[in-house]
Length: 405
Image 1 (cartoon, rainbow, N blue to C red):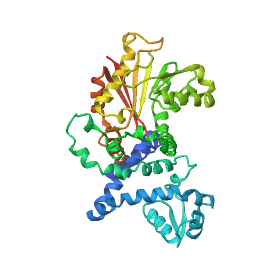
Image 2: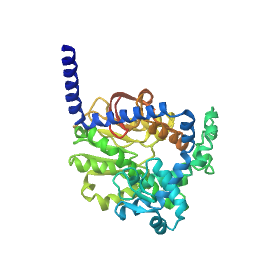
Image 3: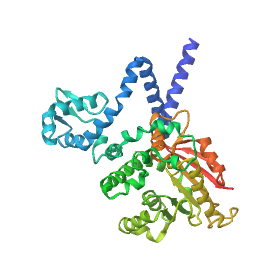
């Protein structure tokens, strides 16, 4: 009797605690990730090993199917027709072969994209809607970009990556360059014939930002920098900086980028952020040579993973040299001692498979990598910084804090 009573009290107490925790978005995000991982582990334990291997081998097929369905705007077409549509009508609108399109959609539905309501009738679901243009979590441009980058030709050089054991500069060429006539990614992207790909790339980066920004915005305390002079180092066109400056009217911003990006940014800010122009400074520079202006906060978001260790250290030293222009023991302004913030995906024991996929992509594209916390600390130690704190955010990113030494 007493045993049953104790067990009941434990269950009730746990249920009450769990209910309170689920109201915490940060907790619920990670508990759902954990549950998803356990379900995946269970599936792999139950499925025959050969089935799992063959299914993984078909991944390249799914990539191409997603590309074709996104390019044809299938999700948008179905959405415009009330959320469901007969394959005959879809094929007629897209000018495609009905039987072959049906087989593509049927395959996609087997992977969780779209729903089959009746024979030949397809409906959107939460996954297929990410292929549409105007969905808040759209990944359409990322799907198009993945194909446009000709990933299949890049991954053919994997054996080259595995055998590379020299520091010879010529042999440090990335897999991307090796499969694109010696041109590195940004060199290739800037070619006149790749103008359309540039547009897709820019839109894809915006999609990725929207996926990660929710967690960064809500799970990290940015208010502590409300009066700071804030440098967004290699911050692109300054989309994140503009949002921070809008949220905190007393924050002063510095956008540090290469000359061509700054030229574009100045034009965009003069149109979209006129009210912020009196508080922002645009600075042109080379990430490896020119230090940014002295400031309170230096923010590097998704920068270090683009580079191998030696170049990542060089970038961090460039930022550190800006603080050398002042006295490390004193405040840059009347606010606080300078601080470095790094937003990166940090690999740990609970890292989902998608982050490891990004890590492999960075290896192919830029000789870069996603790093563990000790690996990031090692970069900081070798570049004049001391690690002080890490904050995990929903969406896969963490904020690493460091101070100059």
